Length: 360
Image (cartoon, rainbow, N blue to C red; front, side, top):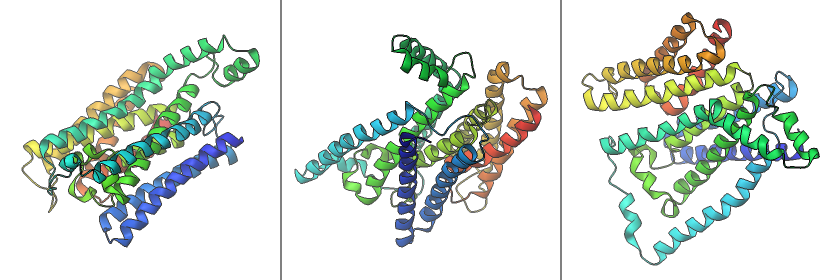
């Protein structure tokens, strides 16, 4: 691993340490639910980074690296440009408070145990951003690769030869898209964790106060936001299973698709038509059933679209979504303190990966 890649890995470990620091804060404030959720996110991120490095650097199980040139430079450059911009927006919030501008206070609504349906819908629609990862893996990534390779034709041979050796169009096309997805999800996670840290330790200076409107009551203190849990889960499964080409991207995309549609359906249908509650929770059996059904259907649709690349058997097309749907239903029934955005992806992916290695 070269120096730039090592710096990049250290950056991700640094942000894992930030998550652990937030975990310590929640423990000190005796917010048990936040503590459990934050701790699980920290462990998952640290474990996935470490395991990926061991598989690549020590066991040599894959020809892919964690991150390579130029994406390591892109991540470092993002950090250099992002932090001053963030400071500018934080300074703007400080100035508003100093000038007694109370317009920001409208984002501190009166929190209730149940989020208003309008904001719940907004919250769930943000999950659809995850589908962009699927498109970058199998569609947009190839387009970026083609444009990238075209530009390299105009560069000196010493540079273009280096790039073509890494992203040869005649080789496995998924190698380039793996690095591209790691980069895009990685910088998103860095940006989100940095801002959420400000929300937790200095809420008045938080520059994204409109996000407060889609946070639930238990998420307004030291519990990290659901978008952080989603980012951690997506980044973790990508760096851990994406190195197993070409099976990894298939499992990752199927797992993420099932997770977001299963979670959306479970919550929204439970809110709108749910009548029978699961024990003493706010979740309903109607929502649980909807989550399983939508997760199953979305999994089949995802696999059908990818069938041309992997020649998936009919048995595989049915059994993989079925197992994923059962996991979604089981986690919904257990109603763990861990955010569904984390638990769905982290549990579904390894199980589907094992089954896929046998069935595909």
